[in-house]
Length: 40
Image 1 (cartoon, rainbow, N blue to C red):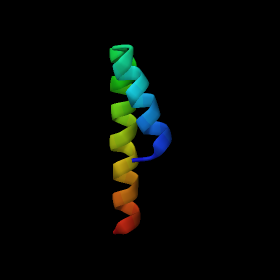
Image 2: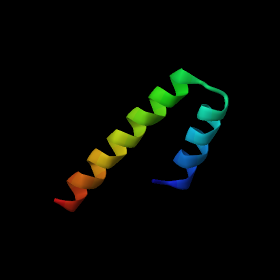
Image 3: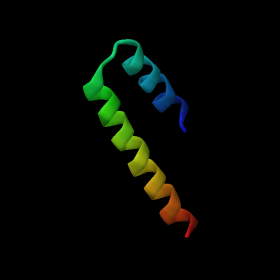
Image 4: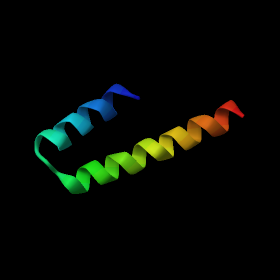
């Protein structure tokens, strides 16, 4: 997981920002899908 994403998630959880948590979660899964496509 990239450092920028870890920092953003930590801040979102700290402030209990549900919208940002959901958005970052979607970014993470999109990132994982892209990385898997590169590996194949």
